[in-house]
Length: 317
Image (tube, rainbow, N blue to C red):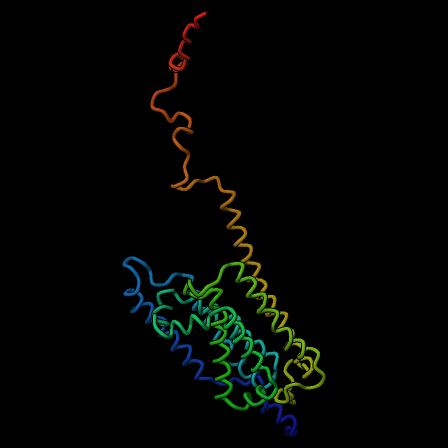
């Protein structure tokens, strides 16, 4: 017969499969809405002969839905909500750093303009997507979601938990819009993108350092008897801080380096190219054998003869 402690551990097993129908419904709804938009609305929104979506859009959407499903379903959701705060941090990173840029890359410009329109909503999104507004809003929400009281309450409150996830995703979509948004006028230049993403990697240093060097338990709801992988509460908190700062920073810095290399290489390629565009060609007079008839010695002598100075008039003594 199992002891009371063993019974509790069995009841609290983090690897017991649990169905989350709301996640399946959400993924199915988004997939169906995307297919409907591409097949029904798309052909009417683009010129004849133009594909509504590219392969890049399709691949990005597939990865976006996979990321949403993995971050929100078993076992990630259950472990992050009940056992490990480091799993909770990884879940938030997937919802804020991976899912939003994939969703934006999956959205063709015509679909973004259909969703946003040209009226007040367009002006609101344009204002909220400004780098300063979007960056500050995103980091404020991230800070709020890491307040111990907020974390401890949201773990026990389903609607609040999902509402916070919704805010994280929406603010992250706005944060990523200046970098890879589908509406061109909302984006900033390559150098601006590098500076912007670098600053986004610096801000999380504060809460990450706080988690890494905190003494004692920060989030009481994660101080449970069952320790996944045998990690103590302190180790779990330190790993969460490392994920927030190191993993997030490496991801953003990789994008910064990629953008910078593409920008520099593109400029270098243009400067070093020997190809001339249609409006930048040599004049015919500078091209060898451009004349219809070849130049002969007789032509040269005739040219010299016609250019001899006239004889000067005699001077009277």
